[in-house]
Amino acid sequence: MMAEAQQRKERSLVKAVAHSVPCHVSLPCIESEAECCLRTKVEVVQRAWALYIVLAKAFEMEEGPLNELIEDLGARSWLSPKELEFIEPRRGAFVSNQDEILGEQRTRFSWRYESLSVILWSLGFIHELSFPDAQCDVEVIEELFSNNDPADFEAKANLRTPGEILDEADLIYRYHWATTQARLEGKESPAGLDSGIVYERHYALNWLIGYQDQPWDAVTTDT
Image (cartoon, rainbow, N blue to C red):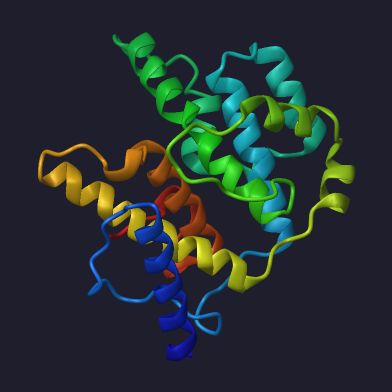
């Protein structure tokens, strides 16, 4: 088990060097295949639709069509508590800066396209994850959801192997360390890495491998 994880780490370090990303060799290995608790296909499919719903809200889909989408999918239970709070704010609660809070939420949740791209990659809808220096192709994602109803979507989904997902989780862990270290030193992210994209990918990948058995809202991205 340790040999497998060590080999994965070494492959990640080779990729990092090829992209001129500094990675400290003392950083530990992540979980092995035997140690990780990979999410099921059903869980991952539901998370994909939950993120799509959240993004629809973030990009200002009107309340009526949004509620209809949730009802048609039967997706309310797929949303995390924080996502539900964003989509269904407390009725009648007076908050003086409600518009400001909603604006901040929209900005924060709009980044979830990057997490969603990882989820879609894990289901085989996206061929590969590119170097995280540029935003994902939103149009491709939108077409994927608009051209497939939930039944077709699940039928076409093919969850990648634990090894494939762990390979990406290990690599993004090291990239996240590099961007965090650069920030702490007051430097720009190395090799053009986008720290926001790196974070969202790390978040999604840690959820996929069941890192510390954390639910979606509580996922940590330790470096």
